[in-house]
Length: 463
Image (cartoon, rainbow, N blue to C red; front, side, top):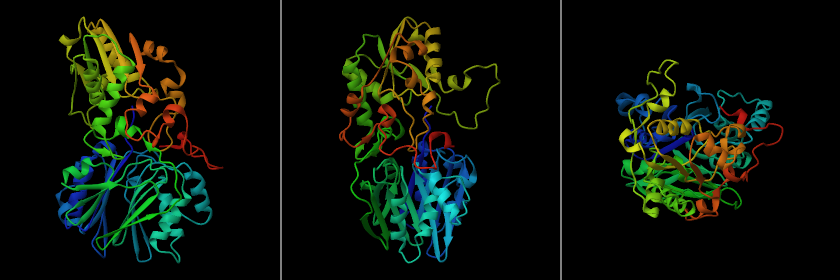
């Protein structure tokens, strides 16, 4: 199973900044279900509320209506890709440096964290967390002497290597930054005369904000006194945006990297149908991830689409776990097939991706037990053969099923009559800007080498 990384949201100049941020985080809950936090600034005092769990569990009316005062706010939902699952690692992260109150929220992963951390500790820095995000704070503080906060942030961003989209509150300034390759999404919008920032535009829709544009790779935007100023802090670098935003992570009603997610996923299904046709009784997805590619596959092939697998939408993190003798219960409690639709039928399952294959195998086995005559699968992305070092919790290479097995071997392991993946060329033909995406998890072509110097930040170091 893939796990979401993080979601960022920020509001500048709105009297209900904390409440707006709450709704923005709520819309992006799918990006992280481990912890949530909001930090506000009222012109003299910085305030915070953070906690483990879902957005609706961390904040209440007292926090939003009384305690989190101020018209500037940033928020964060987190899944840990680096750093343990602890409350002290929840973001935004706050530091006090003289008269400066600094809060930072980070989406992404740095690849030279251990190297930089060792260097900073040798110079006297004391770290409070295990997050790579805290490296930014120490680098900014180190560069503040004699420099503006803008200069200090730009110097820090030139020092780090990896994926990062940042929202930073520095007293009465809000600063948004994206790494030179633009790995992680971050968009700019407006509510009236007030600026808002979000990892996904679905957050803008909930608060009725107007989307302006996506932050550019290597860009820093500063909002102060209601005025927005843009800086380019690095030399031109080829964009390498994370294509898994379009394949899996982003909500289908979002626009990410300037592309409508729903349309891209549907197009992937259409191309998949042309690359790997198969005569079956009907097409079905494993909801919800495969839904939109399945629509595309069905329409392009002329095969009927059936929703023969039903998802239970009320399974939460606090669901009481069954005893050990109830095998595969966690899989069955989430999805259950419509039995009468399966018996004697030839089925085409459209899935968005396969990582380890264990969950898929269990679901296919259940369909066999219900009497499916044939089970075929088409996957709307290429085979994942390489780990991600930039913020997606893909396993070490040895645990990726496609890293060590052929397509035919994977199909047999899963219990399928046939299995085919979308080709890399097919994937690229499904997006508008085919030259701007990172494909490292498919082809091993890493835009930034995954290990840097003596302090090697490899996937084994991730929490």
